[in-house]
Image (tube, rainbow, N blue to C red):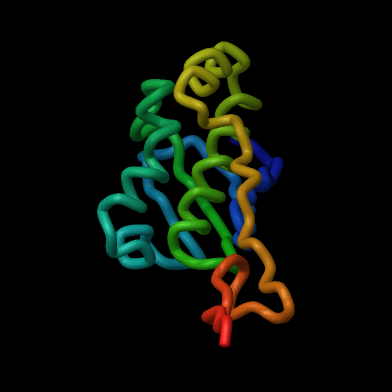
Length: 128
C-alpha cells in the first residue's frame, strides 16, 4: 500500500493519484473511469503504464483531476500513475522510460496576441 500522492500535469489539467494493492479498479473523481472517460482512446491511455510494466490488475487507482479537458486529464493521470509505479519498483523505470511515459509534455496553448484574431491567425490584409 502506498500512502503517497503523485501528481501529473498536462496542458491545464492536474491529476492527483494514489495507488493501492487491489484488483485493478480505476476511479476518477469518485466515478468509474469507464463512466468518466467515454472514449476508449482515453481509457487505453490511462492503462498504458500498467501494460508497459505488466502490472494490469495488481493496483487500484484513485485519481482526482481538475482543469483542462478530457484529453489533458487522461494524459495527466497517465503521468501520475507512471510516477507512482516508478516509486513502487525502481525496475519499472526502464520500461516506462522506453514508452516515454515519464516525460511531462510541456506543450501549452499559445496566447492570443493583440491586433490578431487568434494566436497566429491574422485579420485579412487589405492593400487598398
